[in-house]
Length: 199
Image (cartoon, rainbow, N blue to C red):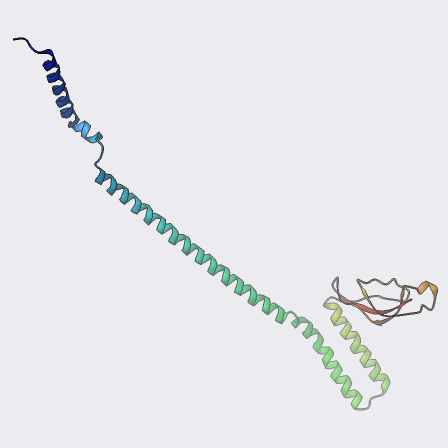
């Protein structure tokens, strides 16, 4: 009996398909086989949960670090505000200590005036007190402006309180008289000299 070639090819192809199915089930191919969908989903869910926990921990750490920094800054701000307030309150302490002896001298001078001391000794005592007072202020950086008649008017140092006709032509626009002395504290003008200028 002759074999039908089409059946023979059909049988061979069926055998080939079966052989391929058997080969697919070998241990080597099972390892490389694609994972079922439910296993993939479970793995990706676990990875997402791990990532979520990691991000949550990083966020908690960042919040904690922020709160600590904010707390440190608030403490620093309060401390510097307190120190500034203390400095302002005690900044004049040195000046007050220097002026207390002058105040005592004024008290003694007033008592000597009440007791009827002679005018000459009272005047000398007041002159001594004034000198002591000036020295105390100079030690703290106070300097009197040196303003004399004929100086140019400088609006950064002087304040014109009035203008009168100049007694001499060379005094026009110049300082004629000082009404109130001006003072520097260090290099800063703390009081302008009040002057009369010639017109």
